[in-house]
Length: 187
Image 1 (cartoon, helix red, strand yellow):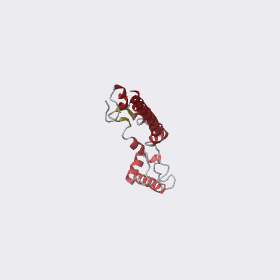
Image 2 (cartoon, rainbow, N blue to C red):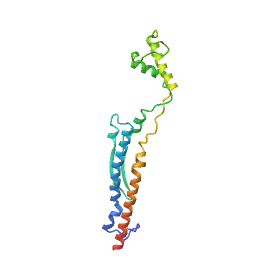
Image 3 (cartoon, rainbow, N blue to C red):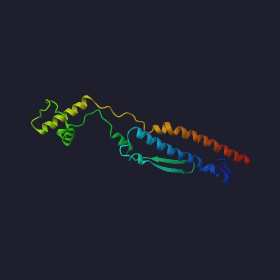
Image 4 (cartoon, rainbow, N blue to C red):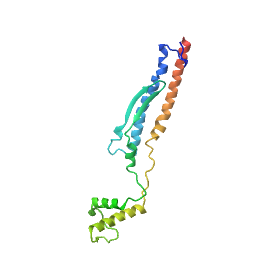
């Protein structure tokens, strides 16, 4: 008995529809993709706590009706954690800079802008304001360069994994097609 797809319904041809070979290939490439992501994250210096590297989860390939699916997930805020170190060209608000100087303490700063070495303003609040203003103006005169492209989110897939995955899937598809033809002609 022949179905609409042209594949005979006998037990020997069942493997053509479940596509176990593609699932095996996909699972092996999930391991390679995870390793590539972790290597790029380490190279970019994102290994401060290790929680991002430990957050990768692989899900076994699931076979459905006419498809094979496999997933590799990472913690949702992976990209946000990376952007945490992004530097902006705008200056922070003066109030925030004052709070920073106050929390750090005046003794951590070598001098107070606008005053000779060793001379201090009349009040501590005036010193905090001068130091905060000096930091703000320094950031305005010498703006930080924004974070460059690190290529750790899609490049490992696009360059290190997917081209080889597609090649191996194509090869396996050819082998599967040849097996199917051999089955058809052996009957």
